[in-house]
Amino acid sequence: MQKYQKYLLPLSLSLILSFVTVIAALRSREQNGSMAASQRVIDVNEEPIADYVTPETKDGRERAKKQAKNGRFPKGRLDEALCSSEVIIYGGAWLDRLPAIPVTLSDSIVIGTVNGAQAYLSSDKTGLYSEFTFSVEEVLKNSSSRTPLSVGSTIAGEREGGRVRYPSGCIRRYKFHRQSVPRIGHRYLFFLRYTGQGEVPYILTAYELRAGRVFPLDGLDEANSKVGNILPQFATYENADENVFLNEVRNAIAQ
Image (cartoon, rainbow, N blue to C red):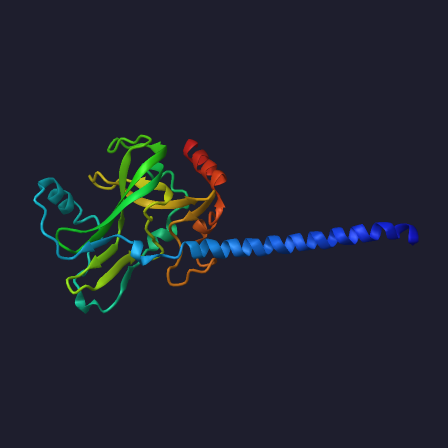
C-alpha cells in the first residue's frame, strides 16, 4: 500500500483540479448565457421615432415614396387615443416559422454597421415603419439589381414599427412580438428581402456581431427576456462564435 501512496496525492489533486475546472466552466457558461440575454434587453430610447404631426414634404419624390408604402405595412389605429398604453404589440407568428439563417428567402446578405435610424408614418397615418441606414463592410450575397452593393457603400433596410411622438408629448411604441430593431453604432449581419416595387429592402432578420460573438436580433420575448425564452431556431446561435457562425452562413449560400 505504501508504494502506491506517492501516487495518491497527485491523483487526488488532479481530480480536485478537474472538478473545480468543470464547475468553473459551467458557471462561466451560465453567466455568459445570462449576460447574452441581458445584453439584448431593449433600450426603448434607441428605437426610431416619428412625430405624428409633421409638415407635408414639398419633395414630390419623397411624397410618392411614402404613398407607395401605405399598403406595405400593417394598417391600424395610430392616433393618440389618450395614450392609454406605452406599447402596442402586434402578433408576429410569421417569425416563429422563419429559418434562423434565411438564405433562400434573402435577396441580399451583408455585414454592416448602423449609422442612422428614423421612423416614418405612412402618408395616411395608418402605418408605421422604421428605416435603418448602414455602411457595408462585406457583401455575402446580392441577387437583386435594385440596389448596387459594394464595400463602403451606404444602404438602408426597413422594419415595421417604431415610436410615435404625439402633440401632447406622449410617446407610444408599436412593434411586432419577438422582433427588435438594430442599434446605431452596432455591427450586424443583415438578411434583406425586397417586396413590391420599393427601393428599400425589408430586414427579414439580423445578428449582432460583437466582440467575436453572435447575438440574434429577433426571437426574444421582450416581456420575459430570460435565456430560455427565445425561439429555438435563434437560440441555436445565441452567444455563438462569430467565425463559426459566418462560415455556416457562407456555406449555406454556396449550396
